[in-house]
Length: 108
Image (cartoon, rainbow, N blue to C red; front, side):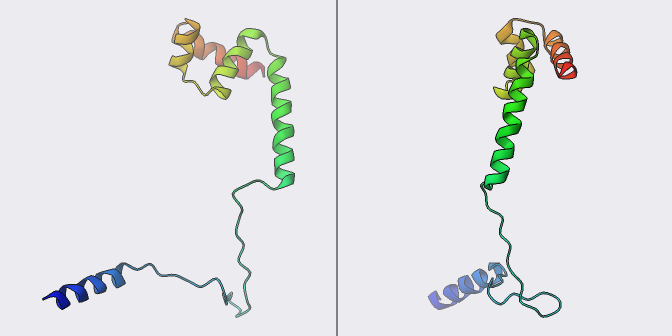
């Protein structure tokens, strides 16, 4: 009885096993060896530099906005607060927050 249960478990595991492919010896449609391209999780130095420049330009644009718009943009996009949270924090009606954020983005 134990052996039957063991064999059933082994069969079950074999059926559930994922089909895997070796990264060595991969070939394309023409039969030529294919290089495996794996994308890194981190940005390369060029992408990192570009992202840093974009962030600095964005901060300069935000600094040029009037203070009330600057505050709303900061709360919404940098602090990632919801409209309701911004309305509670600034003690403003929800509609006012939405309208002023729209105006702030349009003025941007």
